[in-house]
Length: 309
Image (cartoon, rainbow, N blue to C red; front, side):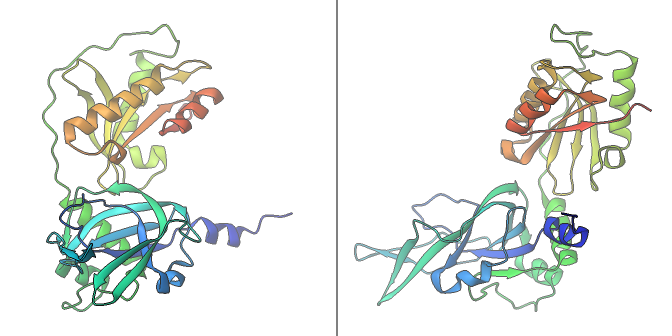
């Protein structure tokens, strides 16, 4: 059957959403994830699908819960955008909805509409600024019926840019320059001229070379206290850092580049005091064997093959 390109384009473009969360009760931890809807508002999320992007706004306050005839109050909320997340699973019906009581015969049944993964939870956009970016009146308190509204892409991108700009940059200076080994027993390349050229090309023009708008170079050869050195550090449009391992050619069974990328992601998360899921890992080479690509997909390392120039 011929592929309907118009349908394909429509299918792969994500929807953009704003959802509101009450602050947690004083005895609960903060969780910046998920889309939750009251039972009577489930239809509001009918168009939600995997890959959609969601802005999470935390209200200043919320109804206290009543448990065993005692009120459990909520912590003071931040009253602004506290996270950007991506939908990884959509639930037609939550198998374990949560019924909350708020006293005086007032209650609600909450359903998880979607599981999400964090993109950036390290920034903040106050409500007044968010209202302006989203085209709402200044006095809008983000208390939408159902707690979920769709957002036009340009306005979503404006909020993303503000959130990324607010993200605290905690990156200590490099400790020392190191000399990488020139070869490793699993194959691949070391610090020869081909490797050096590709590494510098990735650093010089990451967005065009890797095909992702918004990628910017932060460091060429970032040295860790362990003596390890990441080839390149990038930053994406969501203010996530990207640890890049560059190889010349990755042959079947050559695990070195994958292992380095996994290691650098977690070490850089510690250096930046960011959750590991908010740090990306890239493996870049001229050729990458199929078995290594499959392992990279399993362990969350993104692969890029850059043609020889």
